Length: 332
Image (cartoon, rainbow, N blue to C red; front, side, top):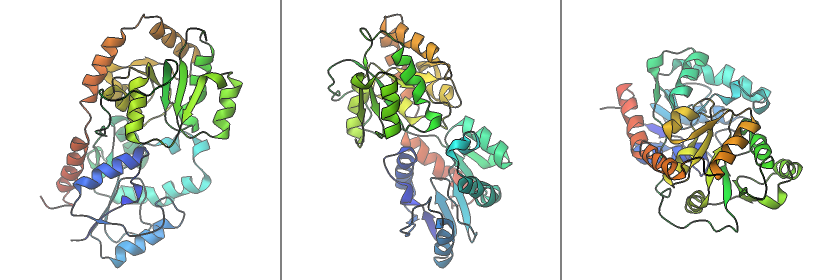
């Protein structure tokens, strides 16, 4: 049987981590030999031709892309439904793609994968498919993220943010909260993200230019050291299908302050402090309590380390393989 896996998703970003780890389990799969990117406008047609030409029996994508014409079984992993909540992040072309091409394929599929119970509920509702055909396989924590190891060297204690700066990430709330803290007693802000002109402008308007450091292009080993060195991670997102930085931080012994939205309480459990993502004042108050000693930091670290043990790539890989077998798409 000709099984194909879309390795083009593999990389250092969120879905890329998932894609790289799941590829290790599917050793009997071939790679998709296309030079186009899975999000390219015409990739769906190129993928359709490739699968038909190679007489594929099963195509698995760790992302949400699909072939435009079906000639085999298709299984995709839908990590979130952000495009249905944040119109400013979904172009007309992207919206049309989901409705006209991707949704019909997912509805016909025997199996769809996702990473949290929150995303599963949204997928079932929006695609109109039975619950039993959507399986939560979760995410894991790469081996670089441990509590032991080097710590990032920074002149002052720092609050950490890890992620992109798209609208749903709610970065402006974090900047506003830090702005409202006493600068003489508050740590600096370190952000692991792309240093866009828009972000730099936000930082300037908040009066935080001298207190903010932006890191980009770092690998997992370097990122782990940044987690270890931080006083805490703040993740103010308005929407997450999972929220990988939260559990990576916990695994590195970094206390986490998380938004109370979408999947984050499910992922963080009792190991995080939660705040209303629409209130910079509430986040400011939580940060003030944290840095004034009103929060037991050692207890947060302990709970975080315990929570992080519940997420492993070995478990995610096994769930993917088992779900494909149970759906009778792979032999037992």
